[in-house]
Length: 217
Image (cartoon, rainbow, N blue to C red; front, side, top):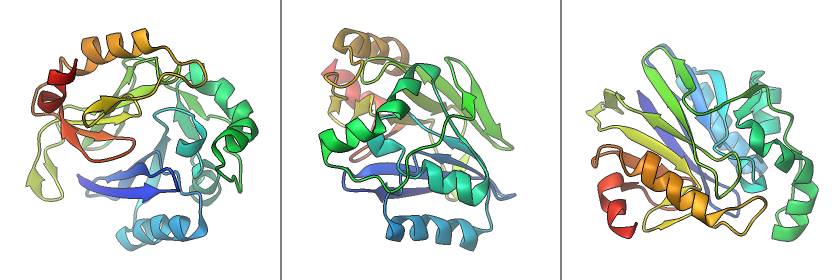
């Protein structure tokens, strides 16, 4: 697997491109809200000769969906996320005003709903959806249990945690549909039980491991 990380928009969203040797690619939160960001993403995809097969959103807060329209228009792939976050797509204008985050194009509707236990895959890459409400009602983390080699090196399990779990903290629960109790419960029951060496890529900020995060809960 090749793994490329981008940092998008003024909110510093971590977006990821996962691809296999055949060039099949899965995008996670490619929230390219500015032209320079869209160009960087497109240039990488073109340089690697990738075919975008899936566009996954960990959740549908505005800062994570700014690239959805561009990806759908350019690569013909609609976003996939949890159904319980659908209402947030109807609140994009309100979120823009609340956070002062300009929106050039609103996100299109979801092309597929993902739920707990669903698996998104291309040959050699398998991501299991873990539904953890609390930051948003439909928050998802994506777990890759056996990544094999990543960028040429042997790798532990990978977790793309969105805004559920960060290095040294967790997502806020005071936004639309947030629930702190549910968030903590989900982190403890679904994430902290993963192997301690699991490498965690959050939606913002630096990477961490499950072992390092267990001390905070």
